[in-house]
Image 1: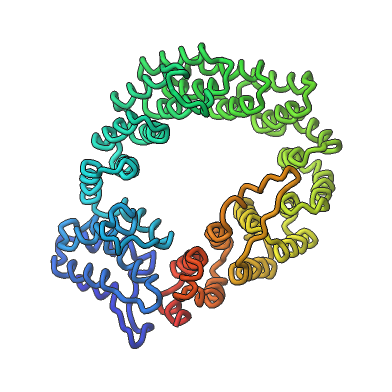
Image 2: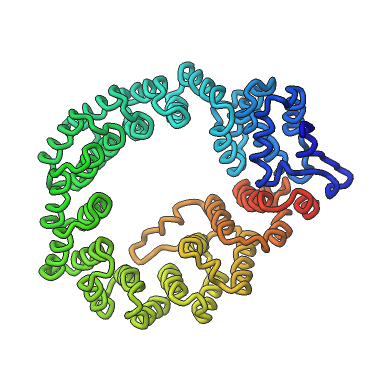
Length: 548
């Protein structure tokens, strides 16, 4: 089979008579293989590429973009394509604003288009893409562009000397964000590179007062460099010695746990790394440091008996209720089912005054089954506090315990129908996805929930910003209402099932009109994101029909 029209034959007058295998995931591998075959004429391949990039879908360009991305991916099998340079250039323009030189190109592009273009850059002819980024880092006069291009180049071509040189140049700048960015990026792309390792070691050896920034803590100053060194300096003796010296010098500081973890990464089995983390559990009064040290120990030595013994003893002896709760939480994570942790939280659940304690206790006790009635009672107590965020968290724990809990679901729907806070919607969808509750809910209940989300996107145009008791704005409300619509769209996408696609497109397609874009580009983008998802999961004829 050498004729490309077997995969793609557009019949505008009767779409159902056309051939659109290019949009069917199960055909993608075969199409790409077709481009790699030597017995297929070059002209056939060129004509297929031309047909893909010229495709006019007639329904909002959703399928035009998909056809273009398939053409770009085909370059990995057909790099000699005459249209290759133009295709990669277009991908770069869709992916990064700094490749759009003409001012007419500097429009804000929908997020799915940008994200898919960036993903396709990693699947197309890599030599062309790498060459474009190398040229950019050598020619740009903008430090911001240099920063972004160097990081992307390093991801596309790990260890690329031009990318590492650019990052080292940025680290020589006086601006904090440049050297901080450079440090973080070296940890992603500089594995085994002696120059990159030496630069990080030099930074770690600097004294805090040599880094002039009055707003930085010790953790801020060293955390990034230590983490980066742990990723790229495996087996490096100088790096090992540097981290050992650092731990001895700053053993009582929060960053010492990160240094111990990095030391273990580059020198697995190092006793100083392990002993440092265990000692922190025994001596620290800092709950963050306690938590971080347990987290690292769970990775490097999950069966460490000394850690379990120490945490058990500290729970029994500490007079600080907050620390006891944190220690019990750490013990429960470190040793699932530990009776001391479970008993501690069972007692705390009866007497706690802080809301977060209830949720941590429920998290630890839920898997045991023995305390579910106690948890249910505590969660309804949280729901009845009437604080929307607290109620939402408690309702999801109730639904996690019993996904058929009608009272909990009805309360959730009522909350979503009446709230004026977009963060409630974001948290609701995120929790449904996290706990896989959307698949546990009965079809009727899930349909009702999706309908609530659609109505929110259709009708909500203003956000009421309220203050809490301490007159602090809730974190998500620092952002504009419109920008948060994008998060809400993502969360709605996470719970849409195949049977909802048609109704979602019908409900939202009119919001892609130009007047809606001019009125609110964020609202337009939120709807675009949702319909993009639907298009990816519908056939081209079905989508075209509903859009027209």
